[in-house]
Length: 98
Image 1 (cartoon, rainbow, N blue to C red):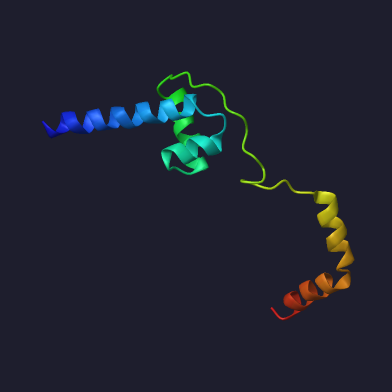
Image 2: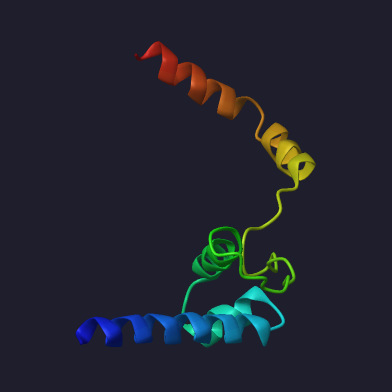
């Protein structure tokens, strides 16, 4: 009998996740409603879609402020160049001491 309760509980959790997904406007909202991380939410949604064929709606992409930051390569390269030879000398020092 316990197995029926476990299956029922799993189904309830799945239904709760799907409801949260369908009624949310972004990934952070789903994560908040389900007490999961954004990465877990993305993973669960992908599993529902690919493994089980559940047609979840598409949500907006992650907000960069809450997730990964974009890299400004030219600004970082300028900063690296502004450091001058100090980064080169530390590299040389580490190779000569080996």
